[in-house]
Amino acid sequence: MASHERFADKMDLPPTTEQPNIFPLSWNARTTKMEEVWDAAQREVWDPKKLPWDTFNPDSYSWEEREAIAYWWTILSVFDASAPPVFAEALIKTYEVHEEDPVRRCFFSVTRDEQNHEQLCGLAITKLLAHPDPLTYQPKTELGAKAQRNTRWLYFNGARYWTGYKKAVPKYSLAVLFSSFLMGEIAAATIFHQMAAGAREQVFKQAFRNVGRDEGRHMAICMALMERDYPKLAVDDRPLITKQIRAGYLFLSGVLFEPPPEFWDLPADFIAVQRRCDEVSRKAGFHIPPYEAKKENWRNAMLNLKGVLDRYNIPFPAIPEVGITGQEVRDIDMADIIPVF
Ligand SMILES: [Fe+2]
Ligand SMILES: [Fe+2]
Image 1 (cartoon, rainbow, N blue to C red):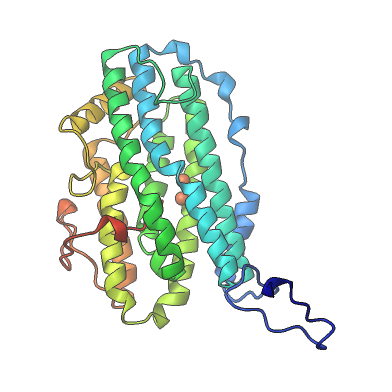
Image 2: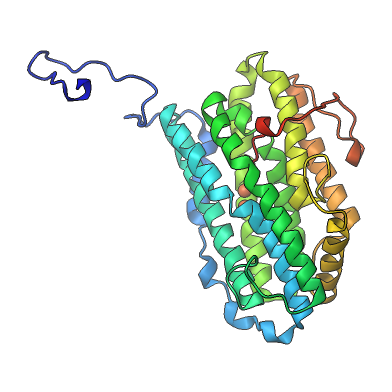
C-alpha cells in the first residue's frame, strides 16, 4: 500500500506534503486587529455555570410564564446550539488553508463562545421547565403546548441546513462564507444589550451582558476578515455575497425578527403563538424588545453591513421587508444557504 511506502532510506529530505493538509507549521501574524480581539476574548472569558443562578427562583413565576420565557430561550437555542459545530467546522478550515495564527485563534474563540451560549440556553431552559429538553417536555398550559408545537417546527427547519453548510465550507473562502455573519452579529450584539438593560432577573441581566459582549467581538472578527479580504475579492464572488446576504436575512430573521414564510416552513398560527409568548414573557418582567424595536434593530444592522459592502462595490440585496432597496435576489435555493450566527 502506497501509504506504507518508506521514504527515509531513499532520500535525504521527505517529499513535499500535499496541500491542503490539516495543519500549518507556522505562526504568521499579519492582521493585528485579530490579535487584539483574541486578547479581549481571553480577558472576557466567562462561565455560564458561575452566573448568580441562586438569585433566580423559577417558582416565583406561573407555569405559563415559565413556558413562555423558556420558549424564547428555545428559539435562541435553535441558532446557538448549531453554532458550535458550525464554527468548529470553520475552525478546521482555518487550519486546512493555513490561515494566520491570530485568525485561527479568533475562530477558536468564537467556537468556545458559542459553546458557552449553548450552555446558557440549556441552563435557562432546564431551570424554567424543570426538564432538560423542550421537545420531550410535558407542557402544563395551553400556551405551553402551542409553544412546543412551534418548537418542533423550528427544530425541523433549523436542522435542514447542516448538510448544505458542510458542502459549502470547502467550496468557498472564509470571506464569502462569513459575509452574512456580520449582519447577524451586529443585530445580535444590539438585541442582547437591549435585553440586558431591560432584564429584571440578575442572572439574565449578567448573561445577556456577557453574550452581547461576545457577539460584539464576533462582529469585530468578521469586520477584520472583510477588511483584509474584500479588496482582493474575485469579481465572480460578488454576486455570491449579495445572494448570501439575502439568505442570511431570511435565515436570521427567525431569531432576530420574525421568520419569513419564503424560507421558514411553518404553520399558519406560528407567529401569533410566538407573539403571545413574547407578550406573556414581557409582562413577567423578561424583556423581549417589541416588534418595532426588533425591526429597527434588524434594519440598522443591515444598513451597517450595506455601508461595508458599498466600500468594496459589492451590490446589496433588496430587503423590502424592512424598507431597504437594492438588487433583487430571487429563487434562493436551500442548498445554497450558508447559515451562520
Ligand atoms: Fe451566540
Ligand atoms: Fe456569535
